[in-house]
Image (cartoon, rainbow, N blue to C red; front, top):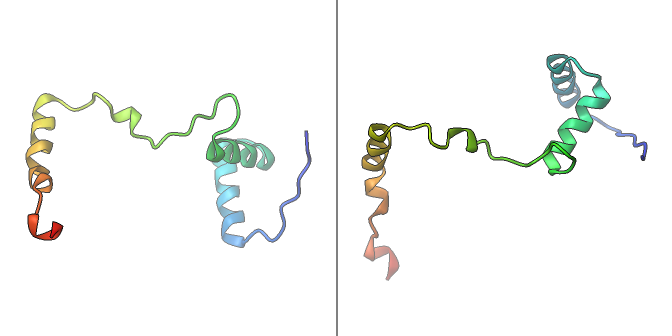
Length: 83
């Protein structure tokens, strides 16, 4: 394993990392490693996700129909824009 040093960490980033470290109840080193692994999509438990997977299949038929009606207008092609 390689040891790395990160220099010139902005105060706001340092505070955010410390908050996250406390939230997780982990060391700063482990928190940074976890965040980097997840952000870069590397490591055994780090699949990158946009977070939408947890929403899949959660709408009722009525909610889906309401959404379809709400976005109906966005499916219209404006021929004037394509000339």
